[in-house]
Length: 214
Ligand code: AP5
Ligand code: MG
Ligand code: ZN
Image (tube, rainbow, N blue to C red):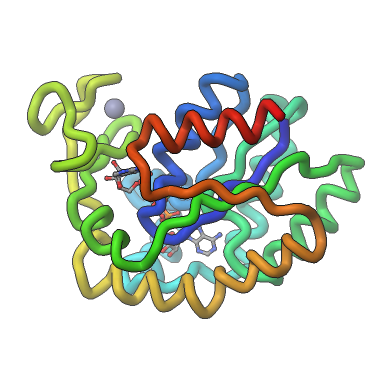
């Protein structure tokens, strides 16, 4: 299965991506996670991306598109992948479409996790992520078994640099202006499945699996 997960910041893309990728045995390609890994190891890509991410702005298209193309040609993507956080602009979507065509591949599913704006601030501010494996937790909605420690790998939980109220508001503006137009883009150029993201994590994943299995 080759799929894209769309959704506002904090909609639950990363959380659901982990469950989907486990079930369907496909790699999880999150541009945000790739950038954060490069930031933590201070690669040239990380140094450049950090300038934008810390302000809640998009990393320039040229840089981001290359990162995704490089990842999509790796062997583990041959039989499927899940893109989380990419594309984020109509230009990125067009470039992705051209690239997939050039390698004789098509998308199977584009799925939007739909969450209204009023949920976004609390979801992002309360998020904690594992500094080792990147998995998301939430202080209220999805706490780890042991405070400050990742259930999966024992890594230390930290707060993302861009999860403060001011930056979340900017990320939401960027989403509205630059990413939300993708909803119409995919309604026109593909087909778009929509799942209500307001429910609990498990209810949302149940509804996603129903869509994916149909
Ligand atoms: P990225 O890391 O992709 O951030 P984002 O899109 O803002 O999305 P988030 O990761 O914040 O949210 P999510 O939907 O994954 O939610 P999560 O599952 O964690 O990108 C970061 C930055 O990188 C961007 O701002 C940009 O600068 C740059 N970037 C990335 N891709 C780019 C691109 N293509 N082009 C240009 N720049 C790019 O859940 C959030 C919280 O809610 C968690 O605490 C979770 O536990 C909780 N939660 C999840 N589901 C539920 C639920 N159903 N009920 C209650 N709580 C829930
Ligand atoms: Mg995420
Ligand atoms: Zn971990």
